[in-house]
Amino acid sequence: AQSVAQPEDQVNVAEGNPLTVKCTYSVSGNPYLFWYVQYPNRGLQFLLKYITGDNLVKGSYGFEAEFNKSQTSFHLKKPSALVSDSALYFCAVLRRGGGNKLTFGTGTQLKVEL
Amino acid sequence: KAGVTQTPRYLIKTRGQQVTLSCSPISGHRSVSWYQQTPGQGLQFLFEYFSETQRNKGNFPGRFSGRQFSNSRSEMNVSTLELGDSALYLCASSFLDSQETQYFGPGTRLLVL
Image (cartoon, rainbow over all chains, first blue to last red):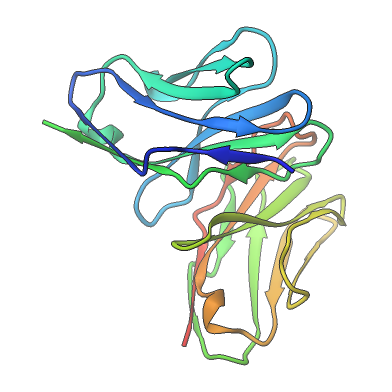
């Protein structure tokens, strides 16, 4: 069975500072990894994914994530946070060959303050 | 391209009733997955349909069912509603394989009284 851990319920950061939202995963074999963002009363919006290749993945709105196989981590990062980045962020894993069953973490609320 | 659409957006039902939710995927997408989001359990996978066949199923009781039509539109049905079924139900579509990105609709918020 696959699982995802997001150890921080909330991350607070000042606007202009770098941000990191942590994610670790457990899955048999090589994973597909995703980050989604959810704004209040909205569905999930895709940010980026790791399928194979370069461990540093660049996504939408200046976000990037680094796949670390030895640490089974896929942390989301952004060099300079914006107030508009404040939202709920979900990491998800998908087992290769397992169809489209995404397993999500519990989510991390990001709050960017002026 | 238009995104994933879900209808209705909001729904209020009483215990014991049944409900049907609808999802129209992005044009050309053949896989439709359903997820339940609640404050207590988070995001949980319900089932996935591909070419009108259920390809994956999560750990939900048989009261939760779904189907997919030849145009890839999907419906999910919940019978004998319970208070705990109150949730945001999200539909996601993708083109084909698991490496493809799943794009989510805005969800249907179901309240069971």
